[in-house]
Image 1 (cartoon, one colour):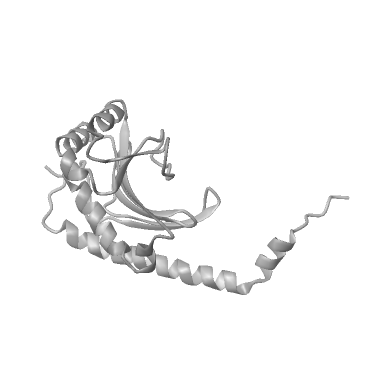
Image 2 (tube, one colour):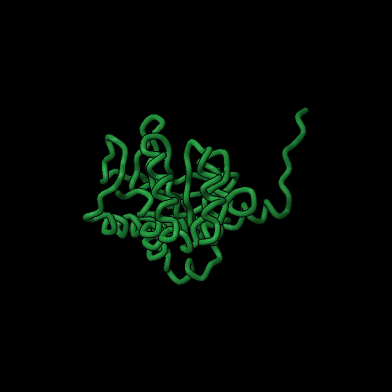
Length: 206
């Protein structure tokens, strides 16, 4: 006879608590509304802006995604602007990782990478000092922050940033906002998205 699968008292309590699931559904809708508002704000930010984008880039293209299993946690994100074609990646992602943080990330790989690296270093004083981090992870799809994962772009770290960029076949700049940050409670994420996007623009404009 197969061994029965048993639930802990805590798991039973959660399974029986309909308030948990109703709250999750309501929060999911609110997060989507925040992402839609960020899409609208970034659309305004892009008006009249010339981007150093790869061939085939469509400035109107975007994507909203919802999932349940980013290291066992739900997530929702917006990619806008969005360009994934072969090895070319040119995307600004707003990722809400439940239980962790909201991340505003510029993802770059492939065509134009050398120019983007040069732009970051040439405009380092403009880009640094805006709560941005450079990802140190071996993958673009790592979303943790902290020692071993990210390097803060402070104004005294240009040489460190240059050393990290020199051997990387891609790079990602990101601003992290913890879920418990007052900015989340006070509805400031759209403005933070604008600030993060403005901060990274020197990297992707002529």
